[in-house]
Length: 113
Length: 110
Image (cartoon, rainbow over all chains, first blue to last red; front, side):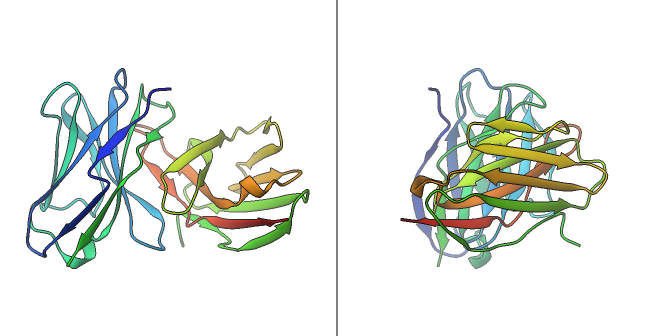
């Protein structure tokens, strides 16, 4: 069964550093998403992406965040200057079409020191 | 008011028990409703979609009451493997941004 994959599984970084989290969505999917989950808290929507554009973003997704689909397979989330409060699990998701089920990747656990 | 509200639990039940979880949502414009399951430190996985007519998948039954903005999940004949956190999830029209509840933790014991 096709799966969403994410790399790395864990990332430790220093405050102020840039990080890039990578995702490979399911191959025939058209809609891509990033969510995050701070330890012990709920899963929160960050951004959705379709046709090489951001479709919707949350208040969390400020100027420090950006997303890109640099080629036909990868979907990346960049955090330019990490803060301590960016420490969380980041999940990528994809869906084949609007109103279709979103499938989540295994997540990247980011720790900012 | 939280967008999606759930009792965090934990619900401790013996194997074979029936357990029910409830969830309320605040946005009356919500269009789609789901239950996801999340194991510790893992990604959310879709358990089932929820329809106004109610739907069943094996031991799992989900119900939606739009008038009361209330969603439920019933698990019959609980298994040890059902131990997880159950996430109530809603979405609106458009690009289906998912809004998650904090989850209800279920522990099934032998």
